[in-house]
Length: 358
Ligand code: NAD
Ligand code: DAU
Image 1: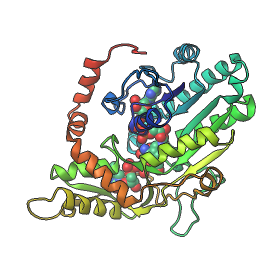
Image 2: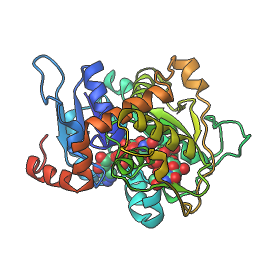
Image 3: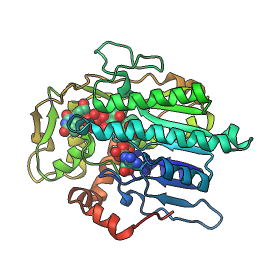
Image 4: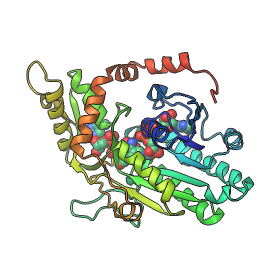
């Protein structure tokens, strides 16, 4: 079985759905359920399938070293896929402390637990063990318009408290490989979008505000560029790296989809015009330029040749097909959005979950 941290968040929950469907191997999800952790993302997952994989959940903070030790000893994982993090750049500007705590100290505690567990593991299990750390392209900083895309050898130059905390966690992972021989893998991915993304991030924020007739806030001049990857493609890439990646290596993951924020929002509006037309006017009428994010990185782009050439991974979705799926999902799952926006997903957690269900 494998341990997934942060499996109640956006990418982690998509990963667990995909893992159970495609790999048929049991999962322990370790998540402390911050505001971004939503167990509704995992409804529909059967906890136990006769003769098949079992899904376990433990409400545990990754900073809690003693609790992690107990979970490793009890579940004896063959791998860890580490998603748990504070992930929103704007929140890191307002309150950086939680980012340092979870992303740096939490990753440190998880590495320590894995190191201790690995030392007690007999071979051949020990030689097969993997620790996969999920990171971001933001650790490389900001590109100019004509700069080459980020590769695995690009220098680290994080510009926000979020990216600095992720950079620190990447360095700790690297150090645990070189110093202690922990069989680590690190992935640095571009902007994800898809089902279950918390509506504080650009794409789900725009969809939900558009439908409510609210303004669609574009920071600065709207010409900042991001590379967008459908979340299912990211999950497949992680599985490839976990199964076939070379230990100690890092792999960049990207969608080959560079877009300005303004292009993204216009395309979202056009998709909504088609799928859920307004009674009068167009959704793009709601676009409003607002004050820029402090330290706003201008451009991210990913050179994904290494994962493509070594492991044969390529994204399946184009931006157009992925965006259409995503908008369709939000339109069909308005209840999920409503529960997040009115806070009742927290009541759902309280009603349906108490203590450690694992
Ligand atoms: P998210 O904010 O949606 O989910 C984070 C999850 O981690 C939540 O379920 C939360 O409850 C949990 N968590 C937070 N602190 C915790 C703690 N101390 N202990 C246990 N659980 C904790 O994040 P996401 O967008 O799904 O991102 C997942 C990972 O992928 C992060 O490491 C992020 O840096 C990385 N990443 C994200 C993107 C993106 O576009 N979203 C792109 C590249 C990399
Ligand atoms: O690049 C990978 C990163 O992508 C991940 O590591 C982060 O966890 C993830 O949150 C994401 O970071 P961004 O800051 O790029 O994502 P966000 O959706 O917050 O913003 C995308 C772009 O849109 C960015 O240039 C800021 C802009 N934006 C965002 C919001 C929320 C707006 O113009 N208006 C907004 O209201």
